Image (cartoon, rainbow, N blue to C red; front, side):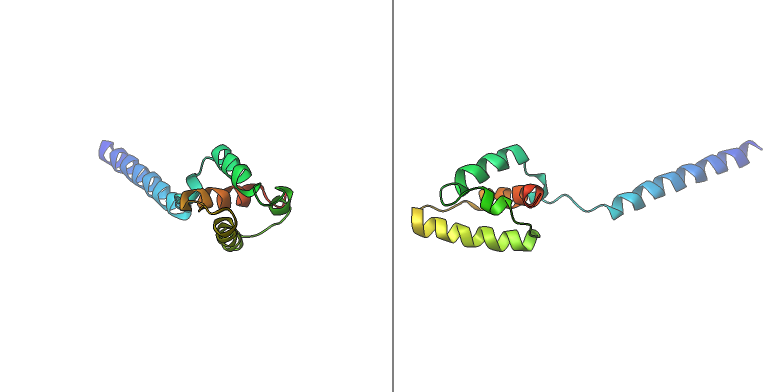
Length: 105
């Protein structure tokens, strides 16, 4: 009887742990861009984008990640040609993440 209970407890534990592993496999991995501090990203967005246009312009649009990536890359090119300085890749990623979370709402 003790062996049966021990085996059943072991099987229940194994099923529980297996279910936890399977549940974690369904969740998307956190990418570096997903771990952006959105408060810092807001500051970067405001300081960078307001140099050329009103912030309501991008905040009024709704785009997916690919759309914002294209837009921010294009704006970074304008920024370099008009203002003579580059927007670092890290800042571009923060701006994209901020826009994904806040634009079009």
